[in-house]
Image (cartoon, rainbow, N blue to C red; front, side):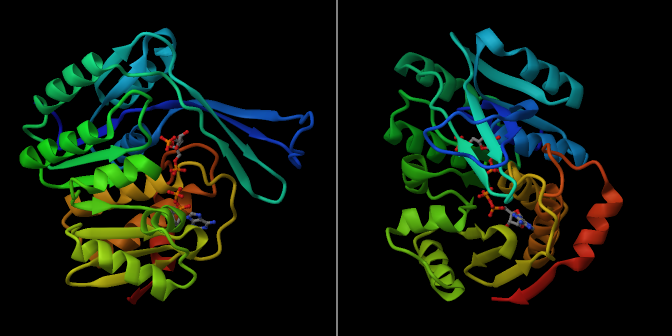
Length: 311
Ligand SMILES: Nc1ncnc2c1ncn2[C@@H]1O[C@H](COP(=O)(O)OP(=O)(O)O)[C@@H](O)[C@H]1O
Ligand SMILES: O=P(O)(O)OC[C@H]1O[C@](O)(COP(=O)(O)O)[C@@H](O)[C@@H]1O
């Protein structure tokens, strides 16, 4: 048994969020601490979905030595906790915003998952997907997980729940694609890494997304930061553009977009409406520090301001 939405975060993180006027590489930098939050991609997705009034099951691995804030978050939001314990600590990632608005992410590697731990997790995780309508697999892989085993695991999940949404980067993204997830959400840089050449215009990005669709990924959504997002499927393509937004933090914008996509799909919105909603919810998220949606009125106002064009 599980909820309609299951999110997997294999390599969660505490996000240590700070402000440094101007980072000097190789020098001592003074940083004011803004927050220290239990996070990681699938957990952020679950958090936003809870704010949008969905019930979510969350799974993956968590270090047993610093689990408290995660357990607290799950019980506070009513997230069903299916995480497997790993001896040691969940990593801390550092996110630094500068006066210019640019954000530097220091994403650490974190704990190691050995083959036995992986095998028992992979097997057990398939046992609680019977009610899942959408499975979200997000983020990087801990050390120790074999890329082929990861791809095979996604393929097995698809046999139980065909709608797998996959959002990752680098080797894990390339490995996951071999299982042909139903929907992926790379950003433009991740798409470039995937295709192996630079994409300098929206037409080139669209073409690369279409190539992936023709290789069997049914839906490719490319997020483009302040420029919005592009959704390409076999039948249709749409580009959504947010208005100019005041940026407080872009950390979690991509995860918020994934949550918006899940919300639209489970609300039976059209692809176009789903993209508008996902673009609005993620654009709204950059104006605030943490991950989550607290102001529904602002969300409705943002939805009205999204420009949508056929791609
Ligand atoms: N500066 C911004 N202004 C408005 N919306 C933004 C901004 N940055 C991100 N977004 C919204 O968040 C979505 C995801 O952001 P993006 O940076 O592309 O993803 P990721 O965090 O995965 O790299 C974008 O498609 C857009 O809708
Ligand atoms: O698993 P990865 O790729 O290292 O990313 C983890 C990081 O991504 C985040 O989930 C934020 O992701 P987005 O900004 O892409 O939405 C952080 O909370 C976390 O520190």
